[in-house]
Image 1 (cartoon, rainbow, N blue to C red):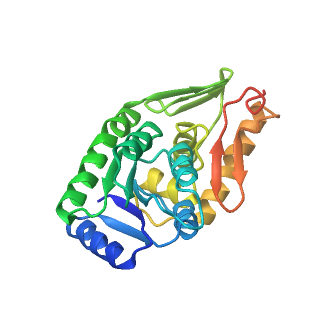
Image 2: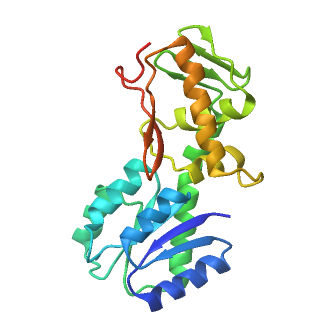
Amino acid sequence: MSRILLIEPDRHLMSAMQDVLLQDGHDCLCHVTPETALTDLARQSADLVVLELRQRSMDALSIMERVTNTYGLPVIIISTTGSATEESMMLRLGADDYLAKPFSMRVFGARVAAALRSAEPSMRQADDVTSIQRGPLRLDRLRHEARWNGQDVALTATEFNVLWIIAQRPGQVLSRANILDLAYGGDVFVTDRSIDSQIKRIRRKLRDVAPNFTAIETLYGLGYRFSDSPEDMAA
């Protein structure tokens, strides 16, 4: 089941779109304002964002840039204009698809399915990766090895999994809910507090071999981010 974040100020249209998404087996996070949508996205993961272009309180391009750069999510733009110039511009700026109002709910459902299919290859490719090199840090998932400049870092299975999740996505902000979903898939009951504790233990163990390690950043109110810049990866 995929989770779709829908930002649409027209409540009637949003309700119709939500019905289609639910019928197609998706979970839907529905918002009439981008502020509440972005707050929700920081708390829990999504697989696709559907964004109405004409937002009153925030620039839609800024929203799209944040969604694609911070969370790496595909975006479908919905617009009342429907001009070829606007469609071309949105696609060039990073939108994965563009729908002009009015549109049929059948077409909407098909476009969502197509956007999710397009995102699958990169997700499968990430799942196929068995080792990660981030500066002096090397992780080997098959051997369950974590090394810093060749020195072993003794991590538990859970700590290794959390470090793998964030190191695999350098520069991307991951909320605690994102990390929980990616690390456990929703199959195990784990609290947000346990993620905080695991991050603390991971940092402590890495600093045992690299005292100046600061690559795991805390963004208060948002989550965690892994940076592989030379300054943050200092040994």
